[in-house]
Amino acid sequence: MLSRSMTLEDLRIFVIAAETGSMSELARTLGRTQPAVAHHVRRLEQELGAPLLDRTQRGVTLTEAGRALYDRASAALAGLRTAESEIETIRGASDGTLALAASSGTVRHTLKPAILALRRRRPNLDFRLACSNTLEQQLDALRERRADLAFVARWRATPGFAYRPQLEMPSMLLVHRTDPLARRQRVDLERLAATRFIAIGEQSTTSEFVREHLAERGHQLAITHTVDTEGTAILFVELGLGHAVLPAVQALALTKRTDLRALPVRGLPPTPLGWVARDFALLSTAAREFLALCDRTLSQPRGRA
Image (tube, rainbow, N blue to C red):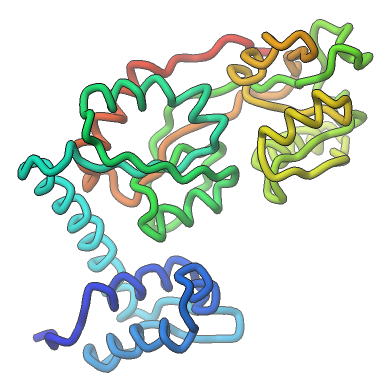
């Protein structure tokens, strides 16, 4: 029988440590000292009488006992969060909760209709948004319970998460109207190797996508600028400092500005986009309703190359 001194905080920190793979990184994320974080895990190990994490200089990994606890504890914590949300709805204290991780550009140009529709249906919805540009940042938001759902590009299988595809999004090259490329109707993929490419983030999903497909054709992508946000990338294009590849729906919206043009990129496949959750079966009613709204509001955008 478990000791009464075991707390939900012990379990929460253990689960995040297992998913992060680093006690020092976990401590930084939570704003605590590493000994304070390690204390929670040691208390669990003492009460259960078995080591839960193997500690090395490279990080931590689950032991056999740790894997058994992690599988049950992660599901229990997710279920508890959902139950709390449902009880608040029953009490009339709120219209439920939904925390979403996605890039700001994706929210503005792709998810905004579904979000607004959900908020009209649930005017007291506790809605939170974690804006992030990379897959790792979005998965971190899920790991740390800052998000229930993440909308991601180019998913790769990751333990502890489930994936549901939503749509495929073509990309376009954004250029200034005075740029020589602006006279073209489209550009070939190989031409991107000679552009002044602007990457959004050090681990830009779009940059990696372009780089991989260029490499298949024997070309290398040279990045001229690396910026933090899509807004900064757009600003750089407006100033004539380079070229950016953006989702077609976003690039086409920007061409309403007379100084920008969006060109289809021939040879660059559409980017797969979809949802990631810890467990879709444990999502709250509000989250499930939001996914249903997205199924109805999201369609294949125009602008395919």
